[in-house]
Image 1 (cartoon, protein in one colour):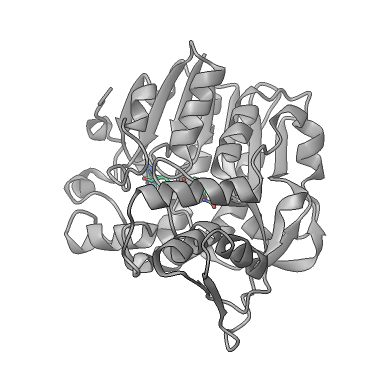
Image 2 (cartoon, rainbow, N blue to C red; image 1 turned 180 degrees about the vertical axis):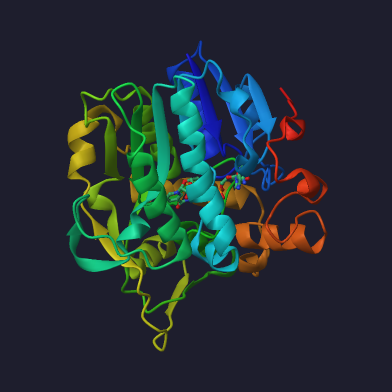
Length: 365
Ligand SMILES: NC(=O)c1ccc[n+]([C@@H]2O[C@H](COP(=O)([O-])OP(=O)(O)OC[C@H]3O[C@@H](n4cnc5c(N)ncnc54)[C@H](O)[C@@H]3O)[C@@H](O)[C@H]2O)c1
């Protein structure tokens, strides 16, 4: 068994590698990532990538076909991974999240890969809080990020066959501790605010609905996708991934996070424009298809783990929303320092960016 995890050096990747290593101890695990956030490690004494057999540094927009040789399953996590980044880097978002994903899936299919798992998002339901949405409901992607995920699902759907199973996991919003923590995620932001300034500042009026999932339960679902057979859900499957009991309103998340720090205040911007991204999601299909891979962590455990880890990290910067815990800030800073070009290629690789370039590939393990 050889599994290729593309986009493994972000927030979701480290837990996913650990989960795959535990489930497939003898598998050859290969990581592929451009490395934007590689040095932003949290809560770990080892580099998460040492659990892999090989780490390749490369850009999905120039993915060399030969990497696919002998691969049995692909997990595609690479992305410009939220709305604020998607707004600034719209074209790159489409290239990485959609075009490269579909091209790489095509290469995978040609190379005889059996299973392709894609990290999609429930945010494609957009403004949809009237009732919990199922996979058959109309999509209303509001942002470049959400649109890229819809386009990818459509493109990938055309490639699925009886020998090439494609699984698009429409994940709820992630939360929880990772070896590459992000604080640009709603619950993580709230817990950090509670610890650092005893204040949770909700940027909307607090009413939007968000389904959540612990990042380690995402890893569990990705592992399920790798092993999924077409007999369980079909050659092409799109499935909401999370649990129905984790549909929360943002203000409820803030209140739950505030409870862990005595005296913590929750402030709601009464004058905030309504956040149109509000969706409740029905996760029954995932429950039916993956009874042994259901989310295991609840909200209070997730908050407790975040609290303990962030406390141990001795994070003191009240301005954490302007720090390297925000993915967009890291990209901005890399661009300002001249490391990244406008299109988020590494500066030294720009001249080669039009051609498939194995020269970008370096093995570190
Ligand atoms: N975090 C969430 O709330 C959430 C929710 C739903 C879906 N997802 C999806 O899960 C996946 C992983 O999310 P994450 O939170 O780990 O994001 P992340 O931003 O932390 O990680 C994304 C990874 O992709 C890599 N990458 C970006 N552009 C690349 C390129 N051109 N070539 C190679 N690698 C590239 C980055 O270096 C990074 O390591 C994404 O597809 C995201 O859209 C995340």
